Length: 211
Image (cartoon, rainbow, N blue to C red):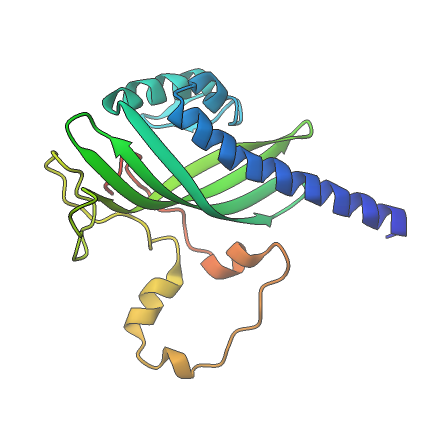
């Protein structure tokens, strides 16, 4: 690869990183301001939608119906990891710490998004977002125990899929000698999540929280 080709590839990668990071920020703004046209346009045209539906119109409808339950929300991004499988496919993890007004109750939420990204005609989109929830709770009530999905005012006590995409969680608790094992080689650049997840499947989740 020539010096010019190398430089061009580096510029394209920087552009991809910036576009993908902005996807996560734009999603948060569109969600909190209830602009579901802007939301839908962040996804590929044939995006999958809960209820075995497809397409941006179905996504707009699903979000508009779902978010009627909440008079207001604040979704805060706390970190973004991005991998690339090819020049047109990527994956990512976005941490999110959120507060939701449920009308008569307030809910605090801790979660991560497991993302897949796709570039079409030079533009990066979400191909899929899988929400992996750890905590839904009244902010004044500590959700002790394994079942941390306890939306205030609702009869839901469940365990989220927060740890299910990552083999290291179960391995740690199953192996008391894990600290003595040799350190694995580091992941290649932009292959961190691929190495970290070690082929684990994307968990099947309820997009409203419980598994």
